[in-house]
Image (tube, rainbow, N blue to C red; front, side, top):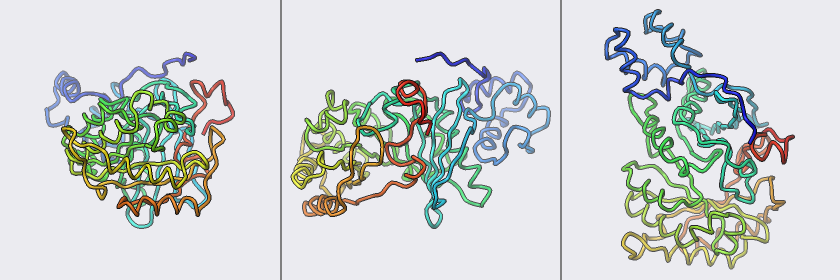
Length: 375
């Protein structure tokens, strides 16, 4: 990995602990209540920087600007899909690395933000462009939260707000567990962003111990498990993580999550023509989901507590093709015959490479392997 010069040494305010902020304020003779006031203003303001926080004294704003960056991410480029419903931002981090983040606007009041948790990704799934980068580095909690702040500022200009957050961008969220959970708690804090935990989804390719840890967090968030195959041979071929945690391991951890949280688990299933899309594969998937073991090794929850999102593969690495619409529908109907809800979903933003598995910037291995694709 090539060295990137550090551009900024001031910490971003979103990465400053409450204790450090309180100490900094105390050293300047500021009252303790300023800490909460600053946190609230940072989370809710549409201002582009410290100077816009007019509820704070001018001298304090100047001191804050000298000590802390307003945001840990800077917009470098933003593009919109042809239908205007999806926007993708290329964001620069303080050390010169880059990530991508996506806003998906739906009819009505739903605005979903897909955020990254790592620059690059170490999981190397065969169909995923991000995996071609390898892992550049983990993101901090502030860098995760500031992606939401970026889109929140844009939405506020038209009297809207971020309603849903999905941890499905670049990276494997459960491989960066501490910062991810810190960012979730900031996002759900009613005094800050106030996003309902039920409107937050964390995706994983199946890091089993961390799935169990997530179940113990006492947060009613949705878990989305990237399964993508029902048999170990196929899943290992397209998802190297399966060498460590097999299909049954992941399904059993999913069952335990449902039992401990009483939250439905979603299985993400990328459909690859002539790889994992046969009716026999659907039958096997149904049997294995129904056979998952719950807490203590007993029978798992009923199949009605799972949902399978069937996603035709987007253009990307591996040369995979989409199944025909008839074949996709047959796969869904097979699951439904076994009592498992299934939906064929078409990713938004494919024309700007913002769909599932398409996020990628020219860093890490991708800088050498594919310099022309910068997202």
